Amino acid sequence: MAAMNIKAPPRLVSYALLLFLIFLVFFVVTVEPARNYEGKKKAFWELAVLKMEVGVHPSIPDHHGRMDHGR
Image 1: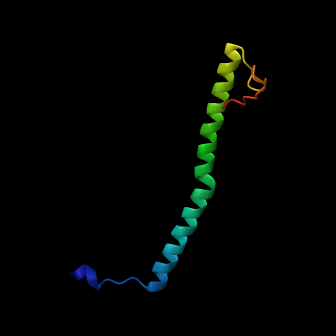
Image 2: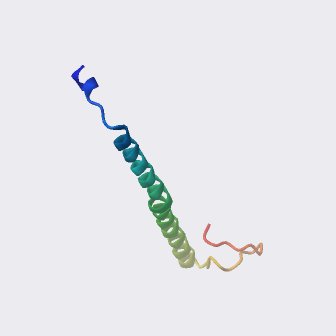
Image 3: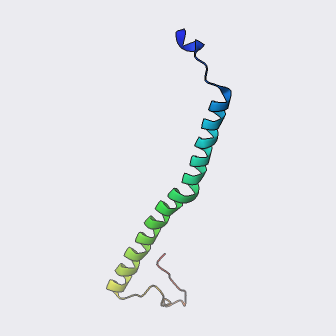
């Protein structure tokens, strides 16, 4: 019950929450898309190299005339 008597100043709590929200927005906007983009870029190049080894260039249309950009 002694822990219930400790009260943080409301201004300090609001500043801490504001700082946490700013950090969260910064992380979601910058770090996470970059991590996701690196994974997609790596997968694209691995597929492109695989297609070139097989003999299909990802920018050359297939026999239906469709472009396959490594997807």
